[in-house]
Image (cartoon, rainbow, N blue to C red):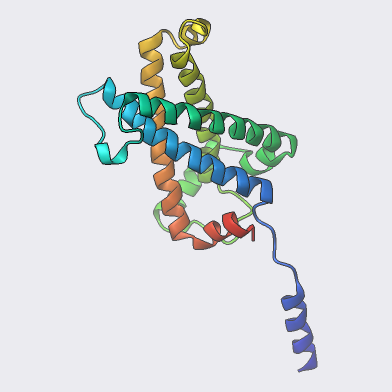
Amino acid sequence: MSSLATVDEHIEAAPAKTIQPAWVRVMHWINALAMVLMILSGWQIYNASPLFGFHFPRDYTLGGWLGGGLLWHFAAMWLLMVNGLAYLITGLATGRFRKKLLPITPAGVLHDVKAALTFKLSHEDLSVYNSVQRVLYAGIIVVGVLIVLTGLGMWKPVQLHWLVSLFGDYPTARYIHFFCMAAICAFLVIHVLLALLVPKSLRAMIIGR
């Protein structure tokens, strides 16, 4: 009986495992805020000159008009760029990206997709990303870089003409920018759904454990 009590005391005394370090949590929520502001203001800008035959509902736009949307978009752009750059540098310098996102193999992705579709994908150890998560997180980093580069080219098409030329021309840069936005929106929906399905992952992103 005493040995069982000792084991229980040892378990209770063991410190909780840190899943998300403080710098990740802070930058994650800043990125989330910046992304939401950019998407809503971007929809306002899009409505002024649509690429396709639809407009985004006014209630889901930010800025009230083209000028207001641009002001919000540029303000959020700097927040996203500075915070995103800091996140990339810190992730590379600490080895977090290499540890969390690599390796990515086709076999591993297919295995985990099948497990996810059959509701057999394990979420016991939140410190280890499965192959689906690795693809999603690595992919959204690439999309984030593309949307920033196309956005800068669209912002200063004369001064940064070389950047616009990298994507072909100005209209092509607009299309790439739009589809990157759509990819980010899809990622956010999946991200939120997974957080709701695995609440402890959301807790870890708030308190770290």
